[in-house]
Length: 214
Image (cartoon, rainbow, N blue to C red; front, side, top):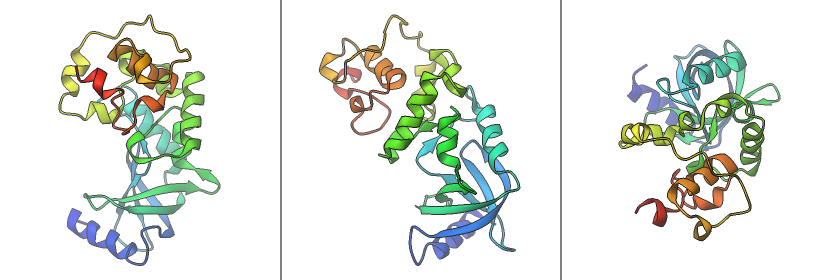
């Protein structure tokens, strides 16, 4: 099925409601947050797990994230709760295997980040904090290797990855506001290591824009 055909099929499924619910069989796992499913005898349709973002294939923990999703859904019948479609014709969905919320489980196990720009779900943020505190999955990587995927995909990501590692002298404390940060490095530490999501009001992955844009 071409990308255009997938887009038309996705639109047909969502014609009645952007929040359609249906079951499908998983036929393949593309990466940590994308899979292909088949509805009945139809052609495979790509599904992007909504509200989460897993490491890209070429970044640390990308392979492990794909393995984590494969272990949960490979060959299984899944329930999809859709949230529309993206520009590539992929359905955006919460995916369930029985009672398991796959999107949430990937965050809980440390295989995925909460996609800050696209969700306000407090449960997902709580699961991410838990995974971070327990150093599960990607949270066991050295700090310099824990780059949010949306930053990795950014045009300036290569330069950011080549930059010297941020100082490791910071410690999580009681700071919650940008005015309390002494540097962009400290703001990034509080956002990624301490769960201070208030620092990233527009959920683009960059904390305290006035400070980090200097």
